[in-house]
Image 1 (cartoon, rainbow, N blue to C red):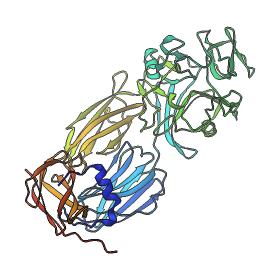
Image 2 (cartoon, rainbow, N blue to C red):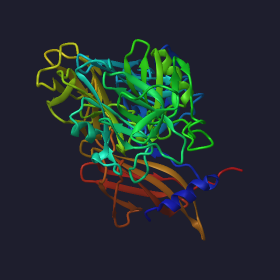
Image 3 (spheres, rainbow, N blue to C red):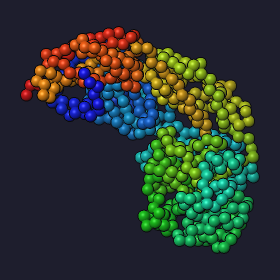
Image 4 (tube, helix red, strand yellow):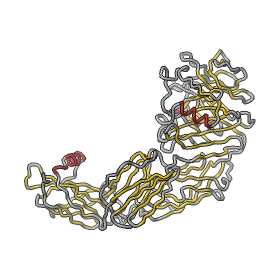
Length: 592
C-alpha cells in the first residue's frame, strides 16, 4: 500500500481504458440527480433538479473568487452531462460535479452576481426548485448633503456589466467648493484618492489627470490662480476642465501660455480659478466630439480607446455639474467601456459638455471614507494618483457613515438549518441614526441571509443568518448607500461520525501478473454528511499492520492499494467514525 502522488493519479486518469471499475461503500440511501432544467423569465432564473428519490436534503448559496451559485444535494452521487447553459448574461458556465463521496453539486459560474443573495429554494417531491434574480444590480440615489447627490447604478453598457457613479451638484452653490487635489502637495508624488479626500476634509472626490510612473502630472494643473504644472510640451495640448471664481464650469483644449491658460477651442479662461488637464474631449454643445486622435490618445499615440474603466467630468443643459466613473465587475484595467458607449450614457443623462480623465486602474470615486466605484469582485488595491478633483460642502452629511454589527453568534453548525440573528445599527456622520426606510442590501457568501434586502426602522435592520451544508469561513457584505462593510462568519463541521469508501478503479500491476493496484478513496464525514478535514485514519490491507494517513481539506484521502488479482480487503478505522472493511473485487480485464 502506498500513498499516491499527483503524478501517479494523473497516469491513472490517462490509462482508464485499462482500468476495471470498483464498487463503493458509501452512505446508505445515496441516490442520483437525474435531470436539470433551466428557464429565464424576465429577471428570474429558475432551476429545477429532478432526483431519483423524493425529499432530498438541499443547500443553495453563493460563493465568490470566483463568483458562483452552488446547489448541494446531500447523500447523492454521480454526475450528469448538461445541455446548453441558461440563457442569461449572468451565467458563464454550469456543471454537475461531485463535491464529496456522498454529495452532488450543481455549480453555476457567474459573470456577475445579483444585487443581494436572496435564493428561493423549494423541494417538492423529487424536484428541487431554485430561483435567483438575474438583474445586474440595483440603483442607489442618495443626498450626501442638501446640495450634493450621489447616484450609483449597476447596468449593461454595450453588452458589458458596468458600475456607473455620479456626483451631481450646482457649481454655483455657495456651500460647495471644488478643489484640485495634489498628491502630498508635490508635483512629483502619488497619493491614494481616499487619503486626499481625508486630508482635504472633502465630502467626495474622483481621480484626476494622467501621470508618470514616478508621480509627475502629465497634464496641466492650475489652482488658486496660478500655474502648478504646464501641459506636456512633447504632446499636443489636451482637453481639460476648469472653474471660474463665480462657479462657471469651463471645458476646452488647454495649453499653458506662461502663467495663464490658453484654450485652443477659443473660450476665455482669463477668470479661471482652477483647471486640470485630462483628455480627450467627449461632448461639446451636446454633440459627440471625441478628440482622441487630435490629442494623440488614439492608435497613433498613447491609445486609451480600448475597453477600460473611465472617469469623466460633464455638465448638463440645466447647468448641473457631474463627476462620474464607469467601472467593471472584476477589474478596472480590463473591464469598463470604450468612448462611444461612454458618450451615449452621458447623453442619456442630459450631459452637454464632457471631458475624459485618467482611466483604467487609476479610476476611483470616494464618498466620505468609502470607495464607491469598485465593482463587487474587484480585488485590486486602490492605486495612488497624482491629482484629484474634490468636492467640499459645509452642510451636514446625510448618508450612513458607520455600522455597528451585533451577532447573536458568529458560529453555527454546518447543518443547513441552524440560524442566528444579526442586527445592524446605521448612523450618519453626526452620530444620529439614519432615517427610517433607509435601504440596506446584504450579500451572503457561503451562508444565507434573510431578508437579503431590508429597510431600517429606528436606524437598524434585523436579519436571520441560516446555515448551509458547507463548513468553513463565510462572509456577509452590507451595502447602505456609499457605506460598504464586510464581516466573517463561521460554519463548523461536526465530529467524525462515519467513514465513506469508494473504489475509483483498478489496473494490473506492472511485472506482477498475480497482482493489481486498486485506487480507493476514503472520506471522513460528520452527522450532516460534510467532509471533516485533517483527520488521521488507520488503514490496512488483508489484515496487515495498520498505517496512519491524514485526510485533506475536504476530509478525503486517496490511496493506491496493491492486492491480489483475486481481490482483497481494505480496512479503515477512526476513533469516532468506526471501522469499515471494503472488499476489493477480483480484477477483470475490460472486454475488447
